[in-house]
Amino acid sequence: MFNRRGTLGALTGGLLTSLLAGAAQAKPDQLAQAAKAPMDPTEVLPLWPGDPPGSAGVTVVETVVDRTVAGGLRDRATTHTRKPTLTVFRPAQANGAAVVLMPGGGYERVVSDKEGFETARWLADRGYTCFVLLYRLPGDHWGAGPDAPLQDAQRAVRLVRAKAAAMKFDPARVSIMGFSAGGHLAASLTTRFDAKVYDRVDAADDLSARPDLSCLMYPVVTMVDGPAHGGSRKQLLGPSPTPEQIALYSPEQNVTDRAPPVFLVHAADDKTVPVANSLMMFTALKAKAIPTEMHIFEEGGHGFGLRGIVDKPVAAWPSLFETFAKRHGV
Image (tube, rainbow, N blue to C red; front, top):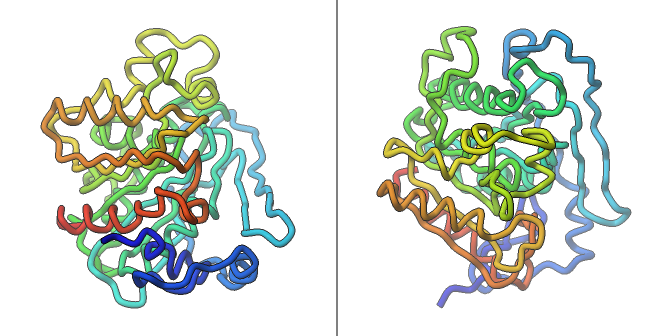
């Protein structure tokens, strides 16, 4: 019988103490103490060799906001990203696969700790070489507008593949994992990996941007009225998107038979991003016979990542993802 508490161990760089089934669960005060331990990686790769595409006229100032509550887990968010990066988490024993993580933030910010760094540490403990993407935001007047985040996502996968030999992982075993609005970005890459959204910069851009597997965590997916997450849609497409924009930026409407296997996770009680987003994506993927697995949990809310899964059904998701990834060679 699966012990959902077992997934909480060794959580993100020491947040919890063991992933073994039946391991004792850490208490909140222990989590607060553990949160002080992990250091940020020092290996940070610039995504672009110079200024990102469409930089002319961009005047915003990149800012890191520390939202950590006294005694709580670290919680930082970056607004107005000017210099997109990949923060690298190297495993002690590499398993030959890599994961590019795309944290959420409603396309207003990128929440680096909860959904990025913490999950990357958990995955690195299991052998994955991880890259947390700090991507640009569509409301900052980049030349590509709503395609600016997709430019960064495509470039990230290509750059990661270009680093595969040096970092000792297989360029044919590169996954992506997106959370909330980062889930929309990951879903967009899943369906539009071959869209020409920027001009070639260097040899890395000769490589494929198609992920070998996609994990969508409580994702924003559709831009259609009703199930759409209003905040993400407004940031991406403005207050009055056209029907053509809604169709292009709704990944469930752009699934092809070239999409990679997809793993979907959502909580039925999510009051921020309706569970219909995952259901719509699942239906579209199945219509194209894409290998797909979806888990809709009774309880979990929104934005749980790894830290919000204690004593909830969603505690099962990390092990379920790992099983799915291994089954599909990633």
